[in-house]
Amino acid sequence: MAYLDVTGLRIEYERGVPTLAHYDLSVDEGELVSLLGPSGCGKTTTLRAIAGFIEPAGGQITVNGKDHTRLPPNKRDIGMVFQSYALFPHLTVFDNVAFGLKMRRIAKSDLHNRVVDALRMVDLYELTDRKPDQLSGGQRQRVALARAIVIEPTLLLFDEPLSNLDAKLRVSMRTEIRRLQQRLGITALYVTHDQVEALAISDRIVVMNNGAIEQIGEPEEIYSKPETAFVADFMGFANKFTATITEKRPDALIVRQKDMQFTAALHGRDIDTGDVSIFFRPDAASLSAVPAENSVPCNIVLRTFHGNVVEYIVTTEMGEFVIHQESDAPRFDTGNAHLILNASKLIPIPT
Amino acid sequence: MKATRWLLFSIFILYFFLLGPFVIIFVASFGADATMAFPPSGFSLEWFARIFEQEQFINSFWTSLRLGLISTGVSLIFGIPVAYGLVRFQFRGEDAIETIFSAPILVPGLVVGFAMLNFFVLFGRINVFQGLLIGHTAILFPYSVRVTSVSLRNLDPNIEEAAVSLGANRLRAFVLVVLPNMRAGIAAAFILGFITSFNNVPVSLFLSGPGITTLPVSMLSYMEYYFDPTIAALSTILVVFSIILVQLAERLLGLSRFV
Image 1 (cartoon, each protein chain N blue to C red):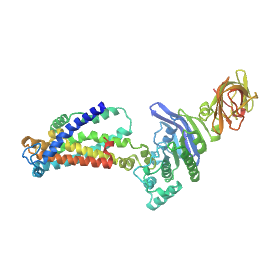
Image 2 (image 1 turned 180 degrees about the horizontal axis):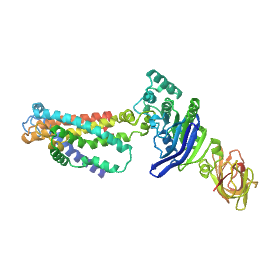
Image 3 (image 1 turned 60 degrees about the vertical axis):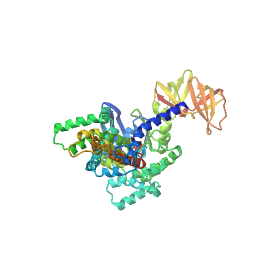
C-alpha cells in the first residue's frame, strides 16, 4: 500500500454526471507527484477531494494507512498552498504562519520557535511583522508555503502555486519548493498546467484529460515516450502523420504512408498491426540536400531565426511540419530539400 | 462647446433645487424673527437654545438614537449570514431571494409602515418601541445584506479553505478569518443603516404611539402647530451631524466603495 492511495474515486458535481470516475492514484512517501493537464481536466478537483473540500460520490482516499474518505477537511492534517496565496489579509506574516499551530493549541514558546523555524526555512524571518499587502507575490507565496509546512502536514498539496508569478520568479520559486520538499521529505501533490514546471519539479507526472488519467510516468518517460495522442500533443510533439504498419520488428515498426516507408522505434511498447499516428518533435528531424534513409522530399516554406534554433516550416506529401535545427547547422533557404526523420524519435500511437 | 454649456446648466439647476432649500433653512435657523423668514431680519442663536427646552425633541432624539443603533445591529446580525449565503453558495432560487431581500427598498415606505401597523395590531401585545424596532430592522435589512455582500465579494474565498486546511472548522474559519476582513463593510453598513433609520419618517409615522416617537416624526408634528425657526435650527444640526458622519466613514473606510 502506498503512502497516499486514491482508489476508484468518483466525483459528481451534478448528480449522476461524474467529473471523475474510476480514478486511481498512488503516491509513495516523500514523493512529489504532479497532476498535469489543461484546465477542466479534473486535476484541481482531484486535489480538492484529497484535501476534503469535495465529498466523493464513491471510492476511497487513504493517507498513511488512515482512511480519509469521510474525514472533515479540518481533521486531515493536510497542508495546502493556493494559487491566490490565500493569506489572511488582517494578520501579520507571523500570525498567518502561527494560525495552524494555534488551532492545534500548541504552547506559546513552542509555537514561537516553530513559526520562526518555518519562516527561516523560506527566508522570510525579517518580515514577520508585515501584513500580506506589504509583500511581493513571491514573498506571499513563501509565507503560504511556511504556513502549510509549519503544521508538519502528512501531505502537502499545491494548487497551481506559481501561476500568479512572473516567469523568472516562477523558476526560482519552483526550485525553492522542490528543495524544501526534498529536505523535509514531505509527500506532495502538485497541480499545474505548465509542462515545463511539471517536468522540472516532479518525481512522477500524472497527465490528465477529461477527468481521466492519460499516462503516469517519470518526467523523462512523459517527455520522450508519450503513450496517447493527447499526451504527445500536450508535451510538444508538434508534428504528426498517419501511416499503416507493414512490419513489426523486435524494437521497431516499419510503417508506410502512400509510397513512402519509415522506421519508428517501439521503445518496448506493444503495437502489432493497424493504423498509427506517428508523432515527432520539431528537433526529431533534420534537413538535407540529398535523400537518405527515413527521408521524405520537402519544400521549405518559411525560415525563422530563434536564437538557439532555426525554425523551418516545411510541406511534404504527409502534411506540414515544424522543424528546429541547431543554429550552427547548415543553412537552408526556401525551396526544395529532404527531411530526414530520426527513427528513434518517431513515436507510433495507435489510432 | 454647446454640450458643455448644457451640462453646466443642468448641474447648476440640480444643485440649485437640491441645495437651495437647505441654504434657506440654514440661514433662517440663525434668524431673529418669530416665524421663518428669508432673508432674516437679524442674527440669533435663540432657536438652537429653544430645541433643548422642548422635551419632545430630547425624548424623541433618545428614542431615535436607541432605535437606530439597535435596529442597525439586529439587521446586521441577520443580514451578514444572509449575505454570506448569497455570495458563497450557488443555489436554485438565488435570484428570487435577492429580489425578496431588496423588496423593502422598492416598496414605498408609507405602504411598509401601514402594512406593519395592521400586522402588529393583528397580533397585539407588541409595545410601541418593539414595533418601531421590528419596522426599522425590516427596512434596514436589505441595506445590511447588500453592503456586507460587497466586502464579502472582494474577499478571496480560498482564505476560508486555507483556514479549514489548517485545522479550523467552518464556524471558526468564518469568525477568525472572514468576519475580521469584513470590518470595513460592516462599519459602512452600520453607518448607512443608522442614518437611514434616524432619518426615516414614513415607517416611524405609522408605528409611533403615545409617548414614544422618533425625532423626525416629532419634528413633523411640531410643525403642525408652530412655524418658528426651531425646526430649521434642528434640521441644521441634523444635516451637519450626518455630513460629519458620512465624511468620517468615507475617510476611514471609503464608504463609496460599498454603496
